[in-house]
Length: 200
Image 1 (tube, rainbow, N blue to C red):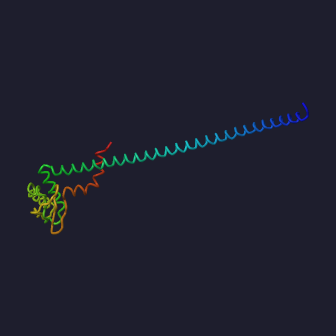
Image 2: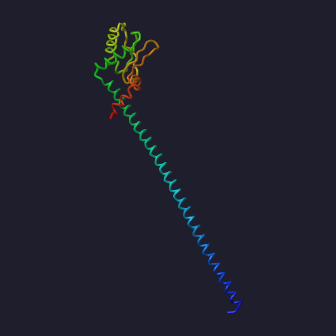
Image 3: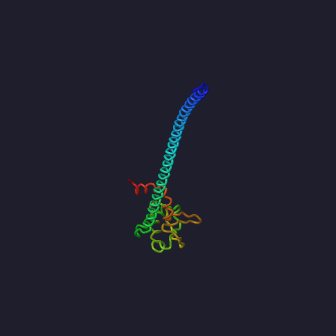
């Protein structure tokens, strides 16, 4: 082998060795970059998974709170309806009392609501015809026992009402209808009625 061939072979060998070193360095660098990218991708993946889990948990908690709130609203509505039905039933019971009890109830209301003992007693058409005179007589007797001159009179007028009565003197009326009496006592009694209905 002559001198030029030796130099050329030597240059080629050096070039191949340098190429191999560059290739090895490039492959090592590529492996480092791939490893770093995989690490970053894994970090990003787990970050997104954690965020997704947290978001899902928050949504589940919100849905749970909403469901509990709706359930409470539903229970409250049901309780209010049951209490209203209880008051409706009480109203029906008052108007379905035996005559003697109903007369006593109306007379007591008239005597307690009377201011002067001289008012007119206004009833429904049905009650006026059935028990009007008895109510006025019994109410006047109760007023007399309290030391008040009982001269209540049965009005010729009647009103549309479920039951109960209205006392009238001039332009002043005292409403003792069953609807009004129950409505006035509803605030005080509703909680007790609910306790009875839903205790335990």
